[in-house]
Every structure is written in structure tokens, then in C-alpha cells.
Length: 544
Image (cartoon, rainbow, N blue to C red; front, side, top):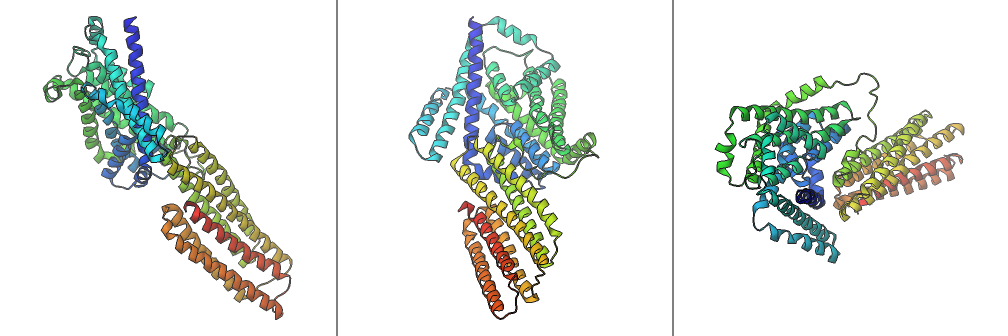
């Protein structure tokens, strides 16, 4: 029974450890929300930058699997190349090793005092009304819970210090390939190499506990865990496009090739552990943590120059489908993989809303040019574009609702609210485009024609609307409300142009230069254009 309860205590400690890391990483992500989105936007062709982005993001969210899943989503959406994804995946493997280093601190005496952060952080959350202070409080509580879990696991293992049967059992597993399979299988089961590595560190910290024959044997478990962690990305790529599957395959190849190379290396140098890490670091846990980092850094240095080779191999193994590929969905950016990282998901929703605005303006362009050219066929294009805009609006709103169901920061909630507002205004613009197609039909039906001077004035007004769209979208993308004065200035020019054009129209009517039946069409047309400008202004002011 004593052994049974110690196993229960060990699992409870592991649960507290992982929960603490989730609280810690989620709330650090909230505090670094803008930076996190910015990092993923910088998917340039620089391989070193990609490695840095992958390592930095993974160090924050504490999971190479989660980072790789997001990368698969970016590749699936077509906004990240396989070249960039490969470098980020390599960096993610480095970033995830920080967990092992934290777990290796379990033998330091001050850990008991650090666990007090759990209580301090919870009180900060309960007593403060400031969202940022509450976020910091939960982050500190998570950090305290991490060390509390480590302390609990260490206590659970204390009964094995004098248990000869337990130590003998560990020594029976000495086959390197079996250890590799155990590490890979257990990691695939729990889908976290961090959890497995932390558990290994707790076990080896038991005095006298030796896995296999000692020496390098424990390192084969670590190598296996790096292979098993790929299962999450592989499962995530199921149902995705060919490039997304290639990204998950590259993740698998990186870890498998690296593990094979290191397995051969360790078999050829049986005393590697004893002659290096064991001499440099007294704590067995710290030796494991340092090897985990050493493995991933060396593999990255070895494979980074061959990024193109990884891409070519994945392209050869996973070919594009030649049938039924079709066009990429308008909602490709709204990948469910991002929901677990709200700040990234919000960035995707923001990009999709900007794309939706582009479609609405394309619809307005088609309707206006159709009116000027007296071309009723423009209505078909407008209806097609409007159907896409309406579908996007529904998808974006649904995606935002799912993001809000996560634990999001107050700042992110404000952005979600602003995007909700913007999608409504963009939808109105597409509806105004449909109105303009009706004016084209009515003018042809009633035989109404407009003079070159009137058409010139309309074009000049529409040029201002196009400029307003560009300014509004820039503000929407950058969230730089200091540029709103430019948006407001252009909008005032459009209002003034509408008043001037209507006054000129009334004057022409009084002089008998315009037919009375043209009045309703012209005034409504100009009014609808001015309303479209208003909605563009509202989009820019969404973050105000």
C-alpha cells in the first residue's frame, strides 16, 4: 500500500507541476500578447531569426508541441512558408528544454520557500481589481505550483531511497532501443516531452537510483521523448493541406534523425555521461537537463544549413493532390489550432477581417464601375463577392466567440470587441454595393444618362473613398489611433463632396439641364457612397 500511495502522490505532483506550467505560460502569454503576435508575423527568410522565434515562443508557452501545432496552422493557412516553418520548428525544440532546467532545481533547498508564491499570487488575484495585477498574480501562483509539484514528486520518491526492489527494477531495463521506445511511447501517450523529462529527473534524483546499467542509458529515454512529442503535430496535420502535413513531417524527421545520430554517438562512446556531464554537474537532474539542451542545440546547428533538404524531402514524400484542390477557403486563416493561444488566434481573426474588408471594397468597386459604365452585368460579380463577405462575417464572428470562451486578457477582449464591430461595418459596405447595382438597373430602365461632368465628379468622390479605405485599413492593422486624424480628414472631404454634388444637381434641375427622374437615382447613389465612407471610418475607429 505504501508503494501504491507513493505512485498516487507522484502522479498528483506531476499534475500540479503541469497545471502550474499551464497557468504560468498562459498568463505570461497574456502579458506578452502583442510581442507574441509580432514574433509570429516576422516569418522572414532568415533561418536564425526563425530559430530565435521558435525558441522564444516555446520558452513562453512551455510546449514545443503547441508551437509546432501553431506552425502547422500557419502553413495550412498559406501565411508561412515551409522554409520559415522548418527553422521555427528547430528553435521550438531548443525552447522546450527550459522545463527540464526548472525541474532540475528540485534538489535546491530554497524551493520550499518559492512555493509560497502560490498563496501570494492567489491573493493578488482575489484582492486586486487591476487586470494586469491579477494576471501577474496567477502567473506567480502558477510558478509556485510548479515548484510545489516538484516538491511533492520528490517526497513521493523518498520511500524508494532504501527500496532495493525499485532500484533493481530500474536496472532491468538496459536495452538502449527499448529505452528509446519507452521514452517515445510514454511521451506520445501524455503528449508532452516536458512532463516525461521532468519525471525522469525526479526519478534519477533518488539516491542510488540507476536506470539500466547507468552511464548513457538514461539518455536514451530523453532521446525517445523527443520522438514521441511529434505525435501532437502529426495528429494536428490530419485533414490539413499538403504543406501542413509536410511541416509535421519535418518536425518528425528533425527529431528522428537527431535521435538516430545521438544514439549511434552514445553507443560508440559508452562513457560519454560519466566523462562529461557527470563530472561537470553534481546533480543527476541537472545532467539530464543539460543533455536535453545539448541534444537540441547540436541538432539545430547540424540541420539548420540543410533546411532546404528537409523541405525537398517532405515535398517528395507528400505530393500535392492533383484533383479537387480548388481555391483556398476564404476562412483558411481561422484555423482551430490557434484557439488554444488566444493572442495568436486574435491576430488571425484580425487578418481575416482585413481580407473581408478587401472583398467588400472589391464589391463596391465592381458596383460603382458598373454604374459609370451602365453595365448591369456587374451585379453578378457583386452578388458573388457579397456572398463570400457574408460567409466570412459569420465565420469570423463564430471564431471570435470561440476565442472569448478561452481565458483571454482584458486587452484581448477589447480587440475581440473591436473586430466584432468592424465586421458589421464591413458587411454594410457590401450591402451598399448591392444597392448601387439597383441604381444601375433603374437608370437603364428609365433611360437616364449622366453627363461627362457628373461622372467625373462621381469618380473624384470615389477616389477619395478609395484613399479612405487605405487609411482606415492601415489604422485597423497597426492599431495606431494617432493616424485617425488622417481618416477623419478624408471623411470630411467626402462629406463636403456629397453636399457640393447634390447642390450642383439641384441647380441643374432648376435650370432644366437634368431630367427629374434622375434625381432619386443620383441622390441615393451619392448618399450610399457617403454611407460607405462612414462605415470605413467606423472600422478605423473600432480600436479608438
